[in-house]
Image (cartoon, rainbow, N blue to C red; front, side):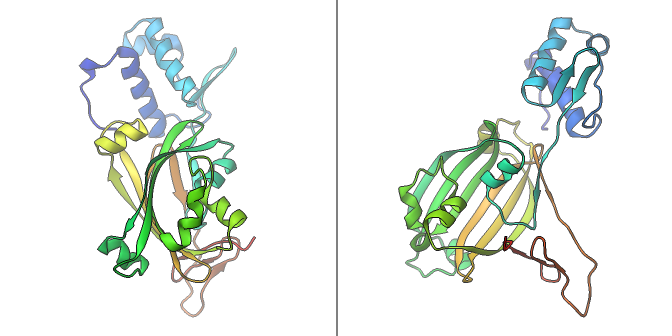
Length: 268
């Protein structure tokens, strides 16, 4: 979290941020008991009411749970996504028993820029539909999606409410389009003023930027996206196998070809 002047922040919020930092950085692991109210009062030299306000914030945001007669325990666990499996946000939230929702920030059909044309193999007159959405899990902002879709393939989706509907679910339900494979990369970035406001985080907070180019099962570019993930809430995992110089190594459960790192949609 970016440095800030604590003199301008309420004491309970300073304590909340301090405890949250300890949880996020692993000082307190999931299932660990955190110090009692009396211990926290002694540590921070504040009133019981101030400590309770800080703990209330942690409780409401799902980082701790109180067990009567036992104490207060950490429940914080990041949402985990398999980086080698191509899935939509709604499916990811369903896997973690969270309600997925979206707010559209921008939707516009226009000529593709030179950069996007090159990425998606479009002509100079090629059209794309740009959609920027803020994605929520249990009403908490988690991801800023900036996606560019090939208009000719995507135009059928524009008649639907894309705040309420999953694009990939619509694809399988309403069209003959099918996803095939994706090329994706990850890098660490810092939240700027816009990202911090949308994601309700401090400016300078670490984010994961995922760039992804998605193809149909016929090998046609369908979507290019640059999505920013809250790194304090989500993480990506990758399953690898020993490299074999003479043979490609497959993990059939996720359709991964190890030696060229292609991400394929599972056949099931």
